Length: 123
Image 1 (tube, helix red, strand yellow):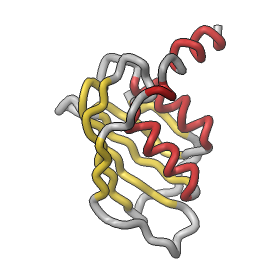
Image 2: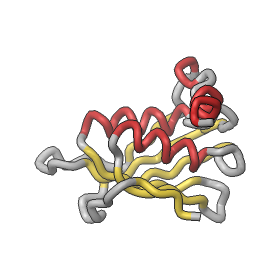
Image 3: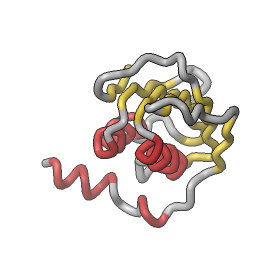
């Protein structure tokens, strides 16, 4: 069953152009881990976005969580090394779900976030 899900969720993901990414501030290069708060806007609820975000995070070794917001956006808190985090941000902007249509992603670096263990979907 896993291969069916993998095939579906990887459908066309490499062919998509990432949505606009707005960086609200700069990351602290003195930190070992990069910690972000991301808000993703567009058609991102009801399309498997959170489920596929968890899968993407696990593939890249990202820790944190994802949840839906009342305004229709998706909220992510995440921590990881710089290179995997950059890939994760681009993955969010492309929309990890083939049914998503991401219009914009805002990224705020926040050193005060906790160091999460694993990555979860907060319903």
